[in-house]
Image (cartoon, rainbow, N blue to C red; front, side, top):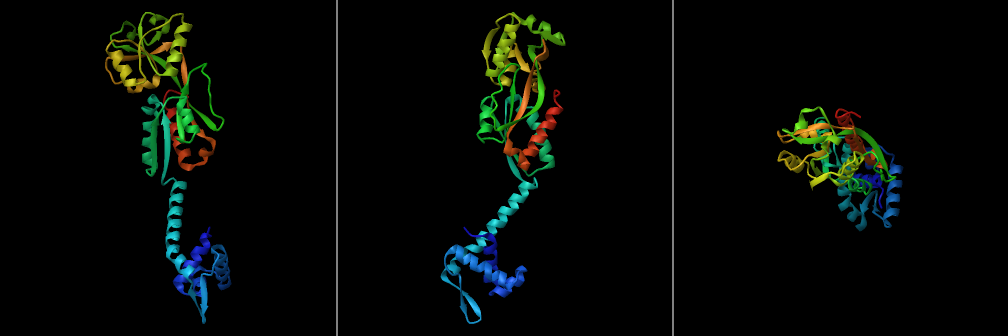
Length: 301
């Protein structure tokens, strides 16, 4: 391994033709340049210069190092410029994992802010539901993950992750627009005992079944889907109704679907997770800050 300072001095000695000229160009003393070249020769294990009269000449090893010194210094300069750009938020890549409704609501607004404020920051998106999304961030497959859990569900948070609370997301019911209960501002779950249902992802389904059990009935589940657009289409077609978080209401795609708050009120908690050490990375910290700011403007934290 070579000390980059010695390579820079070596390159200048070769360029100027002498230790004294290199010292003047670099602002060093001539003995300091001589000491650095002796140290570099110790590192490489062979002489790099020979004395010829009052001057110096490169050895075969010196000539070999000369062919690489410029490339080494150019690479170091490029690396330093890239690192400076990352540290000053002129560039950087952050991988964000999110569940679908967060990906359709929180993520776009946060990315729009980043694009306006720090156009060099690139965000790569991955879609995944918890608990798989938590494993992805714990394994370093993404830098930030957005995940949720319902009251009573175990957290299962790896110790190496920091948890940042983003918002509370009330549960709602999707009804066909012509449904008799669609005229109400809120709908009681107990009034939906005889309905057919469209169930969602594994965690949402577990919470849905538990909520129905607490109201004293077992729901008639017509079908299940993890796709919010498919779920809306099924409700619009009259196949069934669905319990969904309120984030979904902000991207309803069907005029024939109406969302109403469910009673008794239940809210799922939405969090951001990041490896503790990654919170010190400037680009990751910036993206996390914008996600928090956007979430605060959503449904209330």
